[in-house]
Amino acid sequence: MTGAIARLFDNLGGLDGRLLRDEPMARHTSWKAGGPAAIFFRPATIDGLTAALELAGEAGIPWLVVGAGSNLLVRDGGFPGLVACTRALDRLSWQDEDRVRAECGVALPKLARDSADRGLAGIESLVGIPGTLGAAVVINAGASGQEIGQTVRRARIWSRQGGSRWRERTELDFAYRRSSLTDREVVLEVELALRKRDPDRLLQAMTAALTARRKSQTVEGPNAGSVFRNPEGHRAWELIDRAGLRGCRIGGAMVSRVHCNFIVNLGGATATEIEQLIDLVSERVERQCGIRLLPEVKIVGRHKEDKPGEDRT
Ligand SMILES: Cc1cc2nc3c(=O)[nH]c(=O)nc-3n(C[C@H](O)[C@H](O)[C@H](O)COP(=O)(O)OP(=O)(O)OC[C@H]3O[C@@H](n4cnc5c(N)ncnc54)[C@H](O)[C@@H]3O)c2cc1C
Image (tube, rainbow, N blue to C red):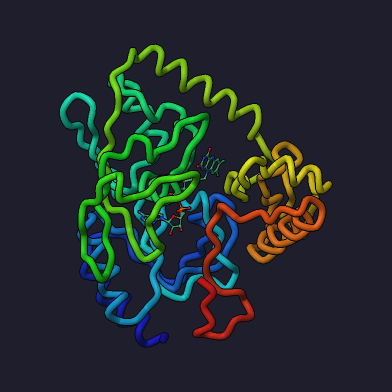
């Protein structure tokens, strides 16, 4: 695999973007934990992104697309292939009165603010979500009653088998924190249909969303937002609290005392400690409350002790 990685690295050198070997993913995730990506590539264009994924696919090397890393845990043994980061793919083009076409790496806070400045409503409550648009579409990210899926008109999706194709909203099956997209499909671009509204009202709504977030989410350290999905009819944080896990700690990872559905890195937490705490919370809540919590965060990569080829992605 090392030879194949070296060849892929050389081939990627012909594409426009930032290319790194053995790049610590702790630098690219909001948890500030996790091992290295064998190759880390931040393409400058969408075509560069798909070309890189094609090259990795042809070489039989695993690949992972990441945005801001705010919903992601990379294990301490790192990711044994190509990590393609979309953050430089952040072009926006405004179309008609109420439509915007945006590349996958656009930051949600910027998109929400720019839309509000133009008097366009629909995503103002998402202003505090620190992720990119592409990832938000995959998980149908949402806050305060708004979800990104409600505004998606269509999205351009790439897969190795199907190439790139626009899919209408109805084909994406948005539901609570999910869409029909699989982890072998990549969101390249998205077209949103927004609604005209008074910019001052939108500004007020954004300020209210940010103030509420500051109150409930000023936590003890780096984190990835809510770790678990809310099970139907329940709130994950309440179940975690009921199971007596507020402040529960493994090494440098702790269940936040401020918001029990957040796990914080108190400084120097390993991805293993964070994952062990996720498992412990899940098991204890099931034992105490009879409800299995499912992670909302994505966990990828190898444990430190894994041998090459033992990928747990
Ligand atoms: C403080 C804090 C608060 C948060 N609050 C909220 C909230 O209120 N609501 C909410 O929904 N989320 C929230 N989140 C979680 C997170 O910000 C969102 O899920 C966001 O959409 C993740 O975007 P990202 O770019 O960081 O994704 P990443 O963490 O980089 O990736 C997450 C997953 O998406 C995949 N992915 C990334 N880009 C693409 C792409 N272009 N195409 C296909 N797959 C892709 C990755 O492979 C990975 O599986 C919060 C996180 C933090 C740290």
